[in-house]
Image 1 (cartoon, one colour):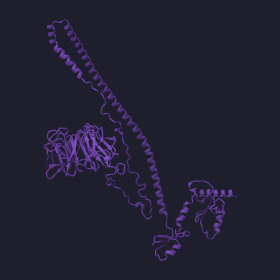
Image 2: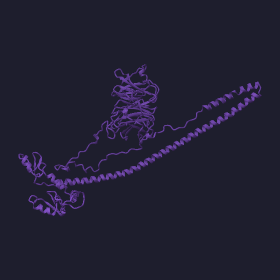
Image 3: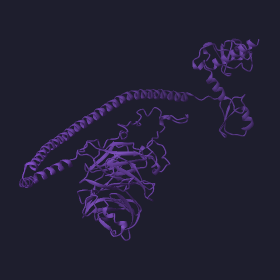
Length: 629
């Protein structure tokens, strides 16, 4: 008996599961739900819409005989629905929440509530806006809305499927492009290796031939020495005193000449052939980049009128579409390239490593190797001063060329105030001013100078210019430099400094000037950089705030380039020491080299938005970008 009862329970559970899952396409008999309460399993032949139950033939007959259920609508045979979830949902939505045994019959406009008869008599007798819901409005508009949404969803699904297939195709194409790129790099590196091999063979052959000549000279000198030795030995044995004196005196120059030849050959040094400036493998971090950009949707009308909630009072065809103007969207100055929040660690504690990305900044119109003597950040891009090609270049933050402008000479320094770029030149006594727009460079204006300008910076809304009186911008020799502050092309002040004061003795070696903040300026002085306060009232350098100089741990030679971040860290390029230094503008602590073994860096800029350091080098077609970790 217990076994039979257990089988009935299992059968009942299985039957209920089948009845509930007919909408998922499961096939099998549908049992009468009323009979299951008596542990009887009769196949259903009908369905009561009001009760949302499957009924067998007997229960259908009893349903019609019962006065309470006589008016219920019954569906039989082929009209029996395989999925009863809509009927259950309708029943649930039609039932009063307060009185579950009663259906909702009225709408109270005063309380904006759907109520049953009992709710009406209990709580809404005094309400004036009562509407009988027995009158059925047309549902054609709702059906049309759902049909339209269904069509749109089908179209959207087809579009996404097409996009998925497109990604597969693009992936295969990009794989081929990557393979071709790798092959080109391999061929290029092979050619470079062959060139090195040929150069090595030529240099080795030249050195070998030179050494062979030295060996032949040694052989000739050896023969001459032996001849002189034999002569002297014979003279000492068989010659008279007079002959000895005469012969030795007459051959004295010959012996001195032999000694000189031997000394000359001994001083000849062998040339050591070795690989230098070997490019580190970890410096080449990528040979290309992948871009994933949003494309304009060609089928913008697929879902532009849909929302999470469908309101039957809204005319969908006349509903306006609101689009976002991308031009007014901006990023926070501290947001990173991948949208993550900027690290809370200060730049002075960040790891730097030696992973540097290279971005090509040589353009199609360039005829010479680039030399980037100025790197500045504008609101929308990166501004470069190219010494090699005499150009001002504007790149996007993704290093796409937006604009370039020819310059009258070779730029040696550039300053930027957010609106204008100021440029001075190696071969011109002139300064030019260039308006910088979002993606273009405006028509420049300029003014002549009496002396040769070698560096400039925007100082107190004016322009400070460092002039050379004797030496060039590229020299490391001490010079009596001249400093002016200009408002436009007019000289507003001439800055003086006391050469007898030890604190200012290095100013005469300055070849570059930069503003730190307020009235503080920094001079790059070959093996050190020094920060001074400018007394604008008396037009002179007043106090030395701090300095950073070369030492055994952090060698700095031919200081070039200067940049400062918002945390007070400054960055200096050492062109001849081939490195970039980071030091504090508030104290002498925390000095370190953040970039090693970079070939002749001359300019630097800090991109805090993307947490990276951008470095320009002499005779280099790439901008070197170091990411802080």
